[in-house]
Length: 425
Image: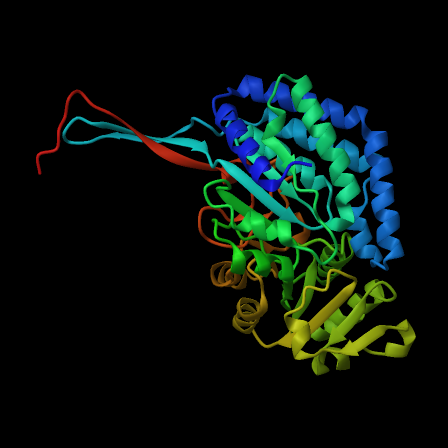
């Protein structure tokens, strides 16, 4: 296997060539990638089965196994995501702005590739293909560093990706894998984070420990994707039947997703009409962590055979990544906003209400990448937003925020045209 320094050099050289490719050439290469993924799906699924088997043997919980798992439908979804990326406009070379200075100089702001990107991520082998396709279309080479739990899957996928790019007349060295991932070992991550002059930007995608490790140790620029401690706040004016289904979707449709709801904030005036409906809908599927008021509002606990515990302070700041839902009672929209801005991770937050003033107050007051009114938080996703795929969900405010598509891997430069002007003062 190549050393990381050799991989860095290959990626930098490949990116220089890729930056000169036009949209037609990049799309042709991505078409080869998509075809190769589909034709090699049996080999990819066999590798993924080994990862899943190993993960179960190590006791990984099923909600996290689901993040690791590939199947025929998920392979088809991956291929479809690449095809959507191909159909999108090339983000490179776009004229963002243009103006003429008083001295006659014409200034153009043009989008350009970010350069060499690295992504460090956990499980989710679909991320391997999503990020490779987005980076390639954006004119960036990319270093993929997945987790040890998905190592067999990622090795198979990157082998197929490189083969597909080559078959499509593309640049296979623009996608590389750091396959040194081992449980508890991070030497390659540390080397990536110190690769000044080689790697232009790094994206951590995973839980709090991974993200904080990258943010605290990186000597290269970081686009921070945050954990998803997401909230839904329910007001008395909300349609309670709709509210119950929205909460059920946000918690159960994919519990280990970063956009799944973790804490439910219930207006004190909503406890009576909501709590009985909610526990009847979620009993047996969810463990509730309730504060005193919300627990008292659940009538006949024994009737539902509930999994129920008293909430602790720690629960408000926890991304459970499982079928656990914390519930806290609040007295106003303002109090809900204060709680979210204290404990949230600036990812996805929702209010369920039919009060226009409260909806606007929530939208203006909540500090998050995505703020929903009367909808599930589960929609925060690059594919759903029309990007085809995503690099992750940025929870920071510099450069990019929310689901990151092609534009997130571009910067810009200024092209200045003159007729002999010189500066005299």
